[in-house]
Length: 182
Image (cartoon, rainbow, N blue to C red):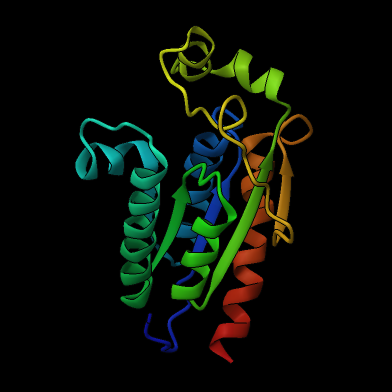
């Protein structure tokens, strides 16, 4: 269980389909939070996965283990005063709920974008591999994506720029930080 001190550190989990805009928002959010005094670490799922599962299969079991480890890592950072931005699809609600159970100051951000637009934006080729049958577990194609039921904020990337989205999230973090300090 994460320590509950007077730190204003929190976790922001950006969840959404692959190529929905999570990484772009994370890149815009980090400097906004740092500008108001947060120490920030972005836990980007692909970067962490290269360490934890260098030859990923994306099986259900491997994803279960990966997201538990990612949530634990984030909880330890938050416990030590680091605000964490999770840039990770986390296609099952259970993954995000587990993180919430470990991190007292948790903000879930639903990054919403239609599947067809995500497929057009997909510079990594994730959806193409799924359509060719080279990957059988792409969230939104073969694997379901469980959207948050009660996100703290919803960001529609067809209506907001990454900077506007980051501004909304940063404002929520600011409000939550004030209540943490009281």
